[in-house]
Length: 67
Image (cartoon, rainbow, N blue to C red; front, side, top):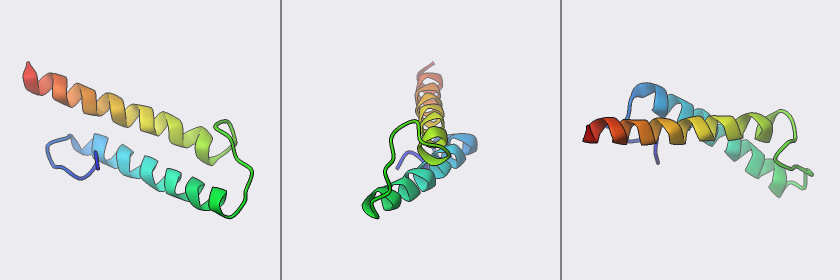
């Protein structure tokens, strides 16, 4: 949902969409019984930094809008 509004910069939306896709794949793998944890490579390991970057971009956009 962070990636949908056009209020946020395009890079935040793109990174958010990439994180959502990776977490969707992780969810499907977990549903199929694949044993995963946060450090499993490649998906959760690369999805969490993208999620953190998305949240940083969201906070930065809101901070910048108030300034």
